[in-house]
Every structure is written in C-alpha cells, then in structure tokens.
Length: 396
Image (cartoon, rainbow, N blue to C red; front, side, top):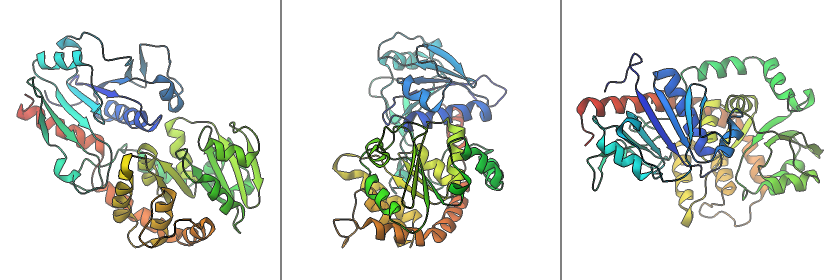
C-alpha cells in the first residue's frame, strides 16, 4: 500500500467522546483534512452523535451511517459486531487508546495486507513523548503491530493539527476589522463592545469563573466576555440573574457578558481570531487558540492525582518562557500553585498583572506560531508515518 491521491486509500478513525466536544473535535478536523488534502477515504466511528452535532450541525443523530463533508460517519454503538477483512480500512486509528471492537481487530489480523494501525495519543509538552513517538507495539496474540503517534510541540513529535489554508485564512480575516465586527455582530456584539477587550470563554465547570467575573466587573477596563451556551453555566447564570440561554446578555460594572450558541468549527476559529484573549479548554480549542495568534489561557482537562498540573507546567515551561504573569494566572486558573504562592488567589491582582503583560504575551504568541509551523502539520506527519510503515511491511 502506498499513500498517494491517485489511489483509493481508506482510513478508519475510532473516537469515543470523553470530553464532550474536544475528542470529537480533534477527530473531525483530522478526518476532513485527511480526506481533503491527502485524498484518503475516511470513515469516522463515533459513539456520541449528540455531542458531535454541537460542533457539526449537519449530523443526523439517528443515522447509523451518513456522509458529511466527504467523510463517512458511522455510529459506534457498542463493542459487538462481526467484521470481515473487507470491512477493514488500509489505515486504522484509535484515538487516545480507545478499545476498537474485538471483531474488527480479528478482521484486521485476517486482512492481507495488514492495515497500518496507529494509536493517536493525547497532546502533552512532556519530554518523554519524544522517545515514545512512532514506537511499535506487538499485539499479544495476533499478528498485528500498533504504532504510537504523539502530537507535540517539537520536531521529534507529530506536531499539531493545522489545515494547509488555515494561516492564510486567519491573516486575511484579522486584517479586515469590518469582517470581524460583522462576524461578532451576529452574536449581539455592538460597536461599543468592539472597543472593549473581547474575551472568549470556554472552560470546564470547576474553573473559578465567578471570581474572575468579579475581578472584571470591578476593573477599570471595559471587557466583553463571549461564552458558549452551557459553559460555566452556574457562574454565568448567577451573573445574569436569569437562565443562561444563547442571546442572554448583561452589563455590570466594566463587564458585559454575552451568551453565544455553540457554533460549527469554522466559526469557532473566527471567534478565536476576532477576540483579544481566548480562554480555552482540553485539546482541540487549545490547539486552535495557538493558531489564532492571540493571547490565551488554557484550562487543562483534570486527571487523578493532579497529573494535569504536571502537564500544564510542562507546557508553560515551553510557552510562557519568562512571562511570570502568564504562568501565575494559568496555574491559579487550574488550581495549581507555585512555591510560595498564597492559597487564596487575589484575582483582581492576578488579572491586573496578566492584562499588563498582554503585549508581551501577544509577541510570544507570534513567535510560538513560527516554531510550531516549522514542525509541520499533524495530518501530513501521520501520513508520512503510514507511508514508512506500509513500505517496510512492518505491520505484523
């Protein structure tokens, strides 16, 4: 098997939606890019079509199989099912070590030639991933070999998801203030709001949103916060004094809060591009914020024993460099502390320091983008690995 656009190469991605939107967001972006830019026929197996529809409104939640933007989407209901070798794709990707149905794996072992089998891992800045990226793992009982593919921030990893036209689209959009204003106007953003500091807010429920709202509300600078419906629902509802539905808005002190509907992925990119600061969560929006070229704050997915704090610090060590205000704010936003940091956060002071450092953070964002672009894009790096494995025949 070779991977060229002239051949009908097939690929299957198995995705279990753990983080409501982030997991399917990553897989959906990857599926479309592999189809559009590499000419690969992609089947995306998804277990939660309801969450999928939040970021792709065209999804039919009652369909067993459907075609969306050139990708075949199949509802992954359970681990049952009987599959034949003819059902198996040339390339099989399991996202974040999800368990592929046993019947499908048995059919993979019967297929000739064997498929290229990859485990697409979660993104981390920890150094150990460089040694594990592209490593093989032999199946304990079947003649199959799986390869680990790690996204990352160095040229010794798989890089970050990025479509080939993304940078050009971003630059064009951000060079046209009228286009940004028109885009935001559909969410009720006024000309007065455009003159304020515009912040998009996407976080997990345990984020200290209420304390941040208080700091913004009592601050000297006008802030317009745009939050998708269902995000930070308790804090948003408490601020509004009413149900946090799309279209709801209120100004208190220096803070104007507007609730947005969930939007499709292309419009979410535009939202990130149009805002001055983006608060993002998980992996998908985290990566898109890096390509937006704007300052951002990351709310990392929580893990047992605070393992996520280690991952957060690993990223901040690479990204924040010597911008202390960015590190301090990010750590407290995620419930972590540096040595000597007070247990109770002074959010007005943290925000004031962060806001004062935003010019330096913006400069760092541009510098970081250049570094990430040099690593290539994840989809192309993944295809290159598949080509190497296929050519070597090292699949059994």
